[in-house]
Length: 268
Length: 268
Image: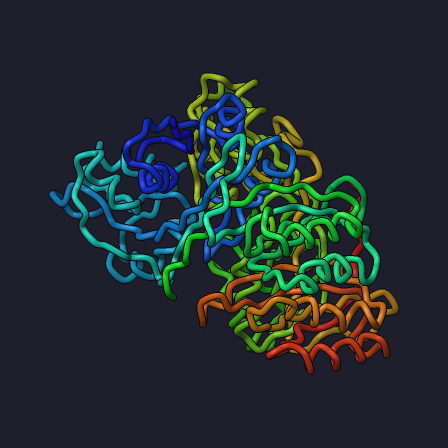
């Protein structure tokens, strides 16, 4: 099965695709929209859904909400920023995506107080720039060094430890029960006191444990919300079935996004 | 009262500070941490908390969680990306913060299919670069054009309409009741089926309407969550008081972030 994810070569998304299945072809696209379109044509897609520092990737949730695709897997990637360069000359410029720069600011300020800090469109583009300039170093994932023939000068340079990104695997169908599963869905409620409470009652009464809940404005009507939730169990489990059936009676609309094997978070 | 917010000059945060109170001094800091530290020294702070496309600004929520500051106001800013440049020469390069570039990608591809796209650390830094190069244009808020002596070549170039950012005003105390208020708080729950449901019951039973709810890993213990919520009413209102008292009996910990006058969202 060919995997489609976000490029260019050297992104964390490409790394996630390799971790998921290193034996398969990986096709790199320039936007989440293009990844989702490819899933519709029979490929499997991989997109980031949540980062422990930056929070939910809203763009991915919105694409799940509006497209006929399902989640068939998840994986969690430890984000390990490295300083990558030629190692040949004095470092004059540090380049990366602004998020990676922000996450490594203390390290950069301490080690290279006089270096110019420059933004790039992606961590992979930053490494490409460093490839062409021996006085420039990039903040990027470790595998990007090898790909572009550069050296890892420092590892784990992010200021905040415990930086993880959760990716979801997208297909035309979700996953068979594995015995340790999660299910994701989106539901819409009216903006009334107690309406969310009523909806969550469907899960509480059936002893189903929520692992993530997020509200988002529906952008259809002022003050109208939808909720994205993850919970433990497979949609074919009895108690999960009951909970979803009850939710359907209480919410304005329910969109099931799929059930899939649960990955354990690395310990904090 | 001096306002402290995120710089450099020309950011949307600076614009939010001016909208909040154009008669006061504005001090610009290089990080959210520094804004919060200034609030502790008697200034008022302004930070983004939520964008309609990008979602919650997790960094701001985490600072609220771990610092002794209160929310005393909110304001909502329409994000209107403009194309800003000299207007004198053919456009060879489009420069901006990657988020602003991503939000304007369709426009740029259609109008300037051959232009090089370049990343900058902020929209304000992008305009500075365009100031020094007549063949370069920046994607940035309209007031940045005037500040740097450049022209607005196109307005409202973002691909998605209805792009708003909500900012909160931070002080050492929250706001007196105004008759149309909101309250924000953070609470921690054990990771058990029904624990969140029980907590939300405190609001439902007292007829208090939630306007935002988001779960975040507490990062203290695996599977341990906290919730950030906004709801209608002032903490001194009778039914809000009751709801908070009941919540305190059900949640492991409750941190009140303050009550403040509610701003109406612009119509979608």
